[in-house]
Image: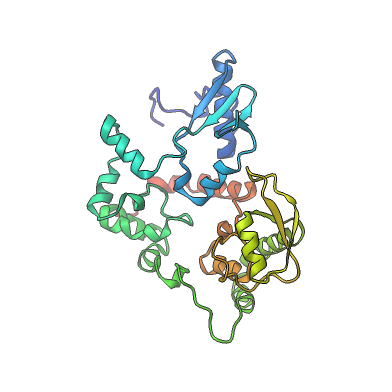
Length: 320
């Protein structure tokens, strides 16, 4: 390992609150705690660059803050005298580049390559190409960095397939049509039967959790959505208010069977249906993010363990 001041390893790690193989989310919190302790236990705030318009998940995260500071949704308290703040939470992508132009900020010049490749600023994303949100942009690697692309195809199974078909129905992109003779429920069952047992059980567990949630607890919905559901004949009832929404929205429980689809509801997609479950399978969304699920700690630990096991492979060139 290089012996430089900026290279941190287990032997010279100054962060006393760090624990070996700590979960990434815990590390972010414990870093702030260590920083506060190492600076005389004074009030500390960690500034993040997250923005609400980056994704629906981040927008919801800001909207549903439970531990805000003086009713500010972009400041969250983690520990005593330690907060995390996202002062750019309401900036748009246009705002970012406008500020960059005015103040001449430094930036990742990969964006220059994106621009030369013909992307709009709203399409530019610097992130892993293998998560659920960006696999359809794999083809960009072929365009902007051919040398890396050759190595990628040689090392990662399915990378070329994803680049070719990432934005097609083959990977569940956009309009998904129902095969003749099927309902969305029967098609979901058919797809589940084609999966390996472990993967099938993962989906079944997620789907059962979602169905139970919408039958017993209910999700917080806007009054506009509730009214539209009633007008379209959905059997629903109110079940108190949701503590996970800033405006204390009414929790709505679905009575009877889960709808086959909710295509007639235009005001939201965040309601249960067999079509929604089916789309998770077609998109290989193992985590079921599109149904509101996140990665569990156990899943994250497995990923971390795999990365640790094969980290020595990163330095291999495979003769490319």
